[in-house]
Length: 126
Length: 155
Image (cartoon, rainbow over all chains, first blue to last red; front, side):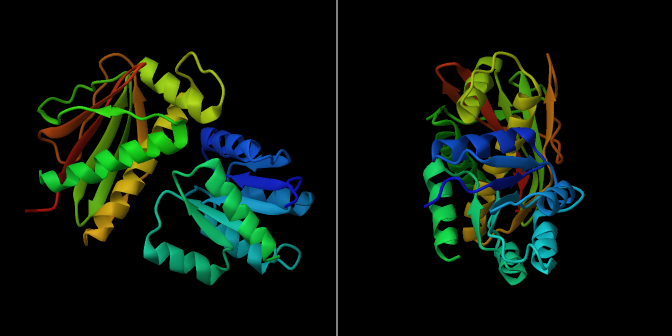
């Protein structure tokens, strides 16, 4: 598994971005960029090559689901691996994310091992 | 308040802290709280609606939250700053999420609002429903914190 992939973390809480960054680093992922919402995430995605997206579900301006739909609708971005982070895995939300083309989701709280496993499984299918 | 709400929030708290901060808090005996004065130095509050209605608060002593967030970030934090306030909101959100998943398994669908964080000496926690709340006290080596629940399912 190539741990040099460039990962975009999207979350409106700076601290949660730091926590996820810390968890990724524990598993050997060092190439990380951050965005505080879906709008800024899209700007980053259009301006540099990102290999993987880890996005929070609940964000102002543009939610994780809205970001996912925007990514899947974009010709250049539509095949990007997208892992949704949520504090709840309510059935209706899971269904909505799957319908929108999410690669997988991960429920908070999670360990670095769980996060790494999710990323590996998604990348193996690429 | 129905005591069936206690376990999901107790389990949610221990699950979140052990997973995210590598801390195993020790739970004490729950008790009834009748005033709105916060127990800790910084608190996160989240409103809940649906099959159960009310609010959840987590209230941390300074030493306790500094240790928790330091562990979460992998760096030492010595003062209550923006990272701490963000983390309190996120911890409240996560505990709420885990507890709500457990309540969902019991047929109680509950949704949560966005948490707010309050801090400072003598700050208050005013629950949506008013009235007394149930306190689940916890402690870690660096200090205490509480889970403060005021929920009703209408029964």
